[in-house]
Image 1 (cartoon, helix red, strand yellow):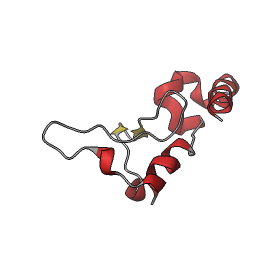
Image 2 (cartoon, helix red, strand yellow):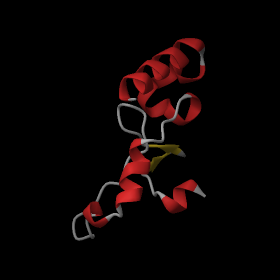
Image 3 (cartoon, one colour):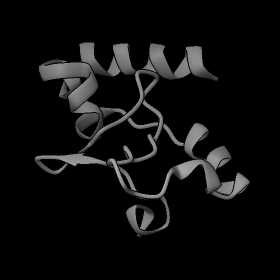
Image 4 (cartoon, one colour):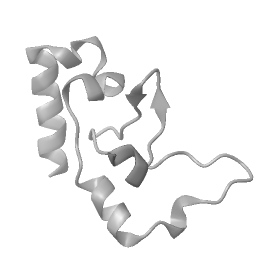
Length: 81
């Protein structure tokens, strides 16, 4: 349901997140409408939803599912907060 409300780019089933592991706005292709007209509540929500573990695999790499990956993910989220 979250992907319906706040769309996100997906690569092989994994969401493309920002470097701080927050939910990223989808990229705008040439000729498409820009995301600048997105409601304020959606912009705020994207900055307040973070992911670790399997959903952060594209940013954290192969360690995303182990304790080292959990630590790296928690550090990134803590810095963003």
